[in-house]
Image (cartoon, rainbow, N blue to C red; front, top):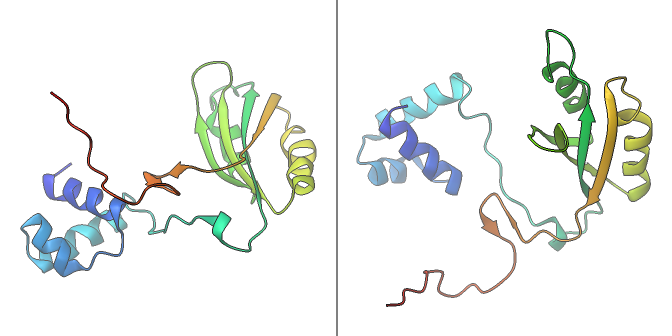
Length: 163
């Protein structure tokens, strides 16, 4: 991938609201070049969407989050892709990862209540014919997500250097 693309991706990942003019200055490129490169990355599916990182604990929104380990039997000629696709189509599922180790898929799921989440696991996920087992871990508190620390010291963020 070209250097300018990588620079823009890193900058946009840190703050997707940076204006084109500022991105141009930061990358030593013209505004037109930056706009063209970003448009190309959007068109080619490199940039899929722009989204904020939200600390939902500071809002009135009620929700329950869980990480679910899923063991599955891969399907012939499709491996894990077919079952992963069936699972990621559920509205409750926010992320799906193919993993190495004791389980095959890791899901990040969200529901309005514990009862809704339990209903999802027991009636939608566990009943899929290739799912052989699940383990649900509820998120109690989020400290850091997508590189953003949610609470803590807002002071000097530089690393301490000692001799």
